[in-house]
Length: 506
Image 1 (cartoon, rainbow, N blue to C red):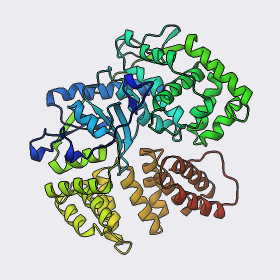
Image 2 (cartoon, helix red, strand yellow):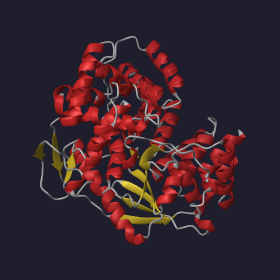
Image 3 (cartoon, rainbow, N blue to C red):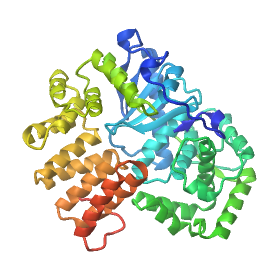
Image 4 (cartoon, rainbow, N blue to C red):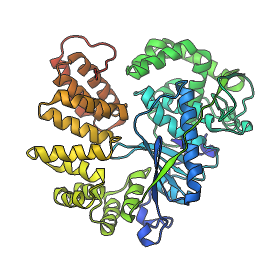
């Protein structure tokens, strides 16, 4: 997530306040602004901004998208699916939904596992906050597993691609490598003045503390963000060969800690003298090191189509899903009850309310699927609620969800798992592959593909995939223990050693 500039050395996380209690939020049913959905080449944008502002917003999103691809890959490759963007006309409402005045924007995955960028339209930084969050989204297609220092360091390294007024990110020293023409130009690897100023005063951070950082947003987070950028920047400029090899290992799906040990043995905490030398080198670099940066350019396709006006209950649920904080059960129940009063067929609210009550959502989801024939969420969640005995109905629900939203990793995964449970692993394979293509770092999708591989007798590939799923889950989700159990099962079945990386033939 992108922190606003004043908090580069200090981060304060404010407590979440339930949406219904917030002065800034009024759903459309109570006189709030109308929300509409727009679809561009790479984004589904939900926003309450005036229609006249939409071309600029989508133009910025698409401009930054092509520049970041050029920066990260060097060409315009096709990224599967669409990221959802929730864009607020009101900065205060964004802050309330985010749960912190220190956040400029943030990236998350929704409960339905959609990649989601949440931001205010008045971002006020030439789009650096958008670029930061977009880097989190796009980099997962290159590096499915990322230690937190690498994730935040990379995002800050490329976010300057959004800057068009050169003085905002002009470096004090360094060579300028020009990759392309001046059209839609953006700089990558530059050191903005605000970053240099913060680094000049912040105390030293031990390397081991940075490498072990889990992304926790506490009062030390600003310092960890700064040093994540510094370490990434230092490695890119001073250890390019090793850093390239490290990134290749991440791209191959290797465990990040093992990849770091392999390429940077002198960064191992067990070698205290070597680590201290690196810390000294980085300290000298941050006060006077020379570096290079480069420019990229690309032409965006900023066309878009206006979609439907969102119903009041759907807006309410969207903001609940976009929230950057959790809710107490009592608060969540009140929110869900209000949504269901606005529209009793809202499928996500039906499921969330049933989870609180520990009841079956099936009867209400049947009504939802009938009333919302074009809503992929109703079909998907109906499929989840149906038991195994409802085989044909369950499959039909999943197939409809995939047809309505082929960009949903969860819908594709659910259909693949269902087909596998019916002994149709070969039919499930391309669908499971699609689920991973859409969200390459999702442990559940990887686990599903591993199960399909095992069902096809591809033991070594299944083992590599299950190991990857277990590693990501243990570090990023609450499903780690379950993944470890499945890994043990696959390891027991597969006795031959697995290759370092694997791909299932499509």
